[in-house]
Image (cartoon, rainbow, N blue to C red):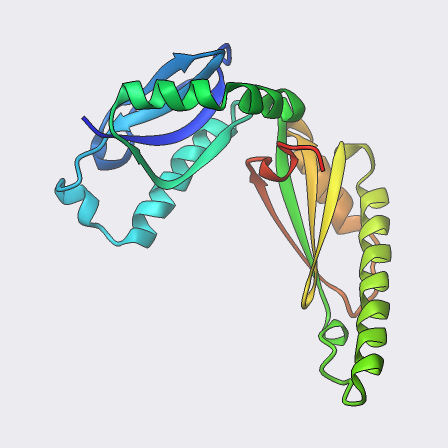
Length: 215
């Protein structure tokens, strides 16, 4: 029977597994090569599978959050449907080294994200030559990086690592945070002194997918 895969954890992680997955099916774990993949049976023509994709994806993510509150996870995209348990085992064997290394790297960490934005970073006010536009953008990005680095200093020991990804409106800042330090992290961000024109939006905790691999 086809199965829906939720996430992968270390095989030794001791957690309380949610009683039900999507379609009301029981969630079970398949162990292979030091990893455990959580799955539930999946029936394509089950009436429960006819719910809107957005609703199903939200329900799927709520289940992932239940796992994440207890241990480090590698989340799988919704819907990741495999033919049967044997295909799940084969998938784990094929990716065992990569996934074990990733879980070891993040350990008890979760990912927090901070989006920095400002109208001044859009570049829309620069109407001159292409060279002037590029210089303005570079200046904006330098400022973004400076603010992101200051933010990293502000969160202090609440974050073990961080990464910055520049986007058109500013930056996405990812932080690897111990699960037990999330409240401290949020408090430190709120107390950080940033320029008045900078918008700050904090979200998480999420699975630490940005930190599974070394750059």
